[in-house]
Length: 186
Image (cartoon, rainbow, N blue to C red; front, side):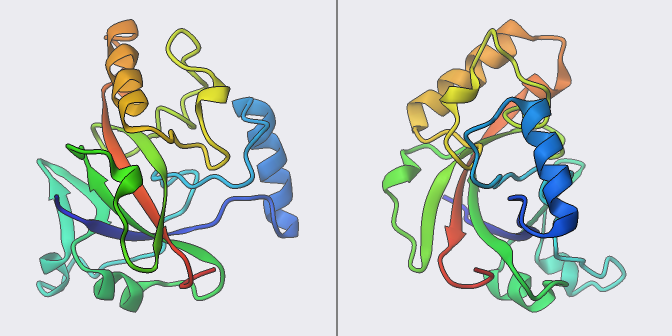
């Protein structure tokens, strides 16, 4: 399995400016049980690494998938070096389309937080930024971070999401396993 890395801003309602956005998001999403949103959706959790696209050295670490730049990187050291925000943030490691249960994989200094369903353009979370797909999953199917806890459930929701919404581009997704660093950025 290929581990990738990213750093993104926390979205949990802390701070004066963030509180209003958080409250509005909770009402819109109906995810009233969230304690924090840990998403791979850059509109919800701003990505904090800015590669220099003119520098060939940076391209050694930028992960692409087909024609898409994913926002993920191949090196943890690169991500830590390039973080453009030094206060509280989420340092994540991920696996795209894992072929085994990741909730039991132990990574030193990281904790498993769940599975994300990200659209095929690596832009939108089908779980937390599409207004819900109630015919496929309910808010209660997501944990307190807005992710799915269980491998089988993640792949089942992915399958049914596309079957129930074949013409919706955000319903054609990748399952992505997500771990968060226990110390860096906390």
